[in-house]
Amino acid sequence: MADAANPKLDPDPGSNTRKDPDDWVSGDEPMTGAQASYLTTLAEEAGEDPPPQDLTKAEASKRIDALKEKLGR
Image (cartoon, rainbow, N blue to C red; front, side, top):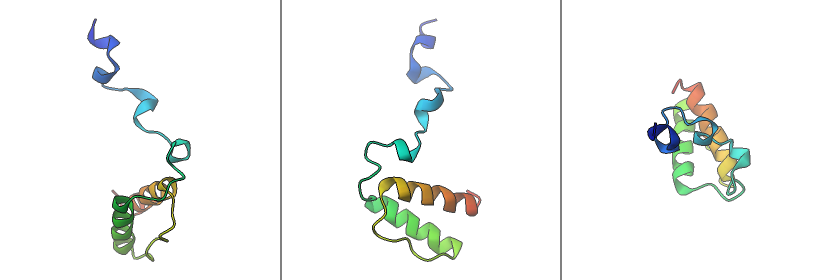
């Protein structure tokens, strides 16, 4: 089947869809403006202090995931 050979058409593409932030090539770069904004919003909703502004992209991603889990999202 031709579709089976195309990974873009695979309904379960596997480990390639979600990469651990620690493995990101750009994970050590400063968090993006979008991450900072979303993280601040989530922290406010969770009743937590705003995040430090010197987080890396990977650290921000992990905090976002933790706050989303805490908020049941």
